Image (cartoon, rainbow, N blue to C red; front, side):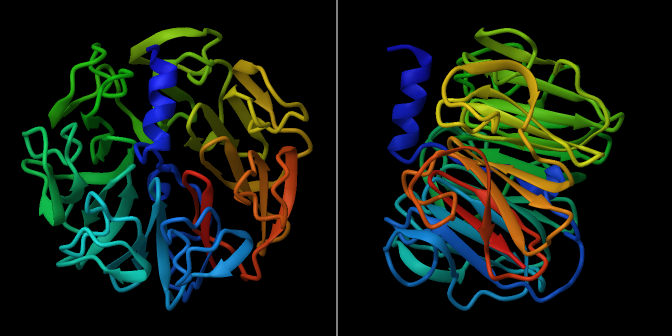
Length: 391
């Protein structure tokens, strides 16, 4: 079986999603403000990942039950996670491998407390594992450890409550997706661990999993990270972007299509980038001037260029989109927030489960408006067929 079909089968079986850790990617405005933010969700809800006390699919945003003062959100394959303003964490949805961190493997359709966490600065959601960055620069991990994605130095097993990642300190930001994890250190370098089937660990090899955090080769001066299902983006302090991992549909944005590249290299033609996001097989970059560029797979119109199908191996402008202030990428879906109207989410791409939130299941090849009923939408994340926002 080729690598691409294998990855899609894995994600369909709950091995994939993440969105990018949005504090790391700078994917929302006002993310450091201590404001009272309620959360909404839309799309697939088969395991309760919308947190609305049901398993009913939603084609427009609904409130996540009893969730207030949200500072940050994360979306796994079939679960959601929220960091609250008081430094504690809530999670909901599927829990077969323990990503809800409550000491059980029982799913629940409303937010519950992740055990033993306080003083949390950021969270990141992988497929069925999660990370929390504490104020002291250390990291906790929980959930599945099949590929060593918890960073414990061993492969296999799971943890249903958070445990320290040994030896990890001076961490400034975290990111996770599928079955791997990333940490951005205070010195601008990056560590990676977990599944390396597509070369996402950036160590020059493909296929050998590593359960211990290790440096991504040749990478420094990093400002933010975005973790895709098989590829990674690093935004540098000079406003350029590096990429590594899978490149079967041009998701590395280097003008190539082919085998994975396990070493960081420059994304073609990008400068003055403010934020990045990585989805299943596509990527987004938000420029300082508010324009958004996309590249990779366009199967469901997720590049936002007005057509379906094909791919782009170099960044292209999203049609009709200007004045954006944030971006997020899911499985065949893309999202942006507008500077002009802070109550609106823009969405495009696949929509078979209502994940675009526009009241339909019609896929869109250009951005459409989603009315969330929130004021000043801030955190925005996308998983496999669903999305979360707060404001």
